[in-house]
Image (tube, rainbow, N blue to C red; front, top):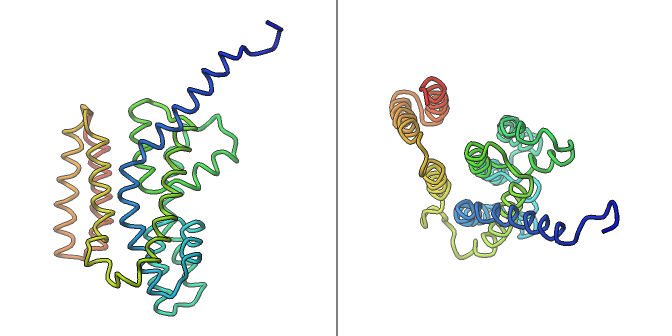
Length: 244
């Protein structure tokens, strides 16, 4: 063997490992895919009611890539809100992604700024949950794994939104089909999969129970929107206080 050359079998093993991590990331995205299909259809149907074409709706999904912000944007377009207000609102709704990206950043210290930019750009609430669970399990997150996870979710969301626009004329009210519950159902599935087989199930259950009680009480005596924020903070505090 010539000096400096890598044997073909070593290259094959490396390529197989690379393919394995990428494909595993795609597989781990399956729970998210089911949720994105329903939610994407709902987003597309709402976009259709705002007068957006298939390409405009898919373009919004490609560039904004945020379910909650796209629902808000579509509603603001429907109410003829000024463009600066829409942009300003979307910016603050998506501002949470800064903190999510910062949370997983320690797993990618060795990456270049450009590579981390693309990883963070495609990170969503749902893929963040899956990636965080992966990091807790393995104490690391493979670059190709999270690439497979992110790209699969990204493409699925864009396609689901486009299909939603196409069928929007036949389904005027997406809530009648329960599509608005898709996000909640998806997070329940992600939660179950992340704590399944985990020794910290008791801790997770305590956090869920406390957060639920705080949400219900806050919704009754304050408001649902504020209750969501208060319950999220309460859950985070409980998670920090309770010992493993």
